[in-house]
Image 1: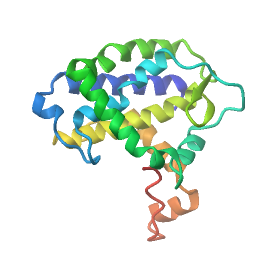
Image 2: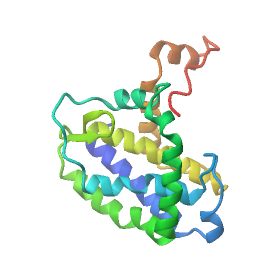
Image 3: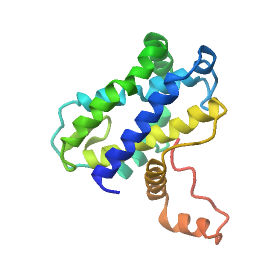
Length: 205
């Protein structure tokens, strides 16, 4: 998938987040999700700051850019941030959900989302952007991670609401490709073709 196609996929996913959020009741927002301790509102809050981060990214440090795969493998290592900071991330999501309230949570996507997409379309694919605890990456690689975050957690939201896993197909396919890239290639091929009972999954927390 090209850089422009990834932006298109992200735009479609953010639009779906806005549409889902715009139709939720108070009971829906409070519905528990399969992410322990997180309700639907906390899931919206957890990913909701991404559009603002795209609009106002921190200055990029100097250095060789790393790929989406490099970043996610580091984050999900046994002592990686995805594990060591899990409790703090969850607490921050719950606090942000309470602070923003439903209108603010929807505005992350309905208001900031379209502006962030427009900003991305003006940025070069190989432009550098800082990524926390990873150094720098390129926008084309950063969007792979952002797409994955929003697809995975949109599926969490839809599951918590008891709805079908209806997610835009281009975003689903790009996320599946990134997850496959994270797995050991031999173990993945062997398991996917039924030649091994040893699964290389999961590849992230």
